[in-house]
Image (cartoon, rainbow, N blue to C red):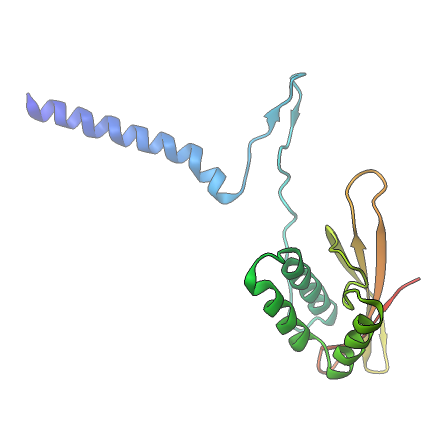
Length: 173
C-alpha cells in the first residue's frame, strides 16, 4: 500500500514539475505569448529583436559592433565597469588619430565625441555608404526618442580597410 502512495506522489510531483517547465522555459528564452488587450485583440507585449549576425572582416560590421557596444556601455552608466568598458572600446576600435580628435571635440564641446551629444540614443543603425582610397565610409543613424516623430541624428564614420579601425567621425548633414 505504501508503495502505491509513494508512486502516486512521485508521479504527481513529476507532472507538476513538467507543467512548471512549460510555463518557465519560454520566459527564460526571452519569448512571450501575445497578450489579450481589454478589447480582446492580441498584441505582442515585448517584441523580439531581429536576429543579429556579424563578420569580423566587415568594416561596416565593426562600426556597428563598436556603436552597439559603446551605446550599451554609456547607457548603463551606473555600472562601475561601464566607463572602463567605453574607454577600452575606444582604444580597440579607434585609431590613435581618431581618439585624439574625439578628445579634442569633448574638451571643446563638453559632449561625447562618439555620439556628438550629451545624452544616449535609444536606437542606432549603421549603413555602408561607399569605399575608396583604402577607406570605407558608414553612416550611423542615432535615434534619440520613441514615438511617431523621433529625433534622429547621423554620423559619418570613416574606417581604414586594412586595419578596420575607425579613422574619422563627424556629424553628417
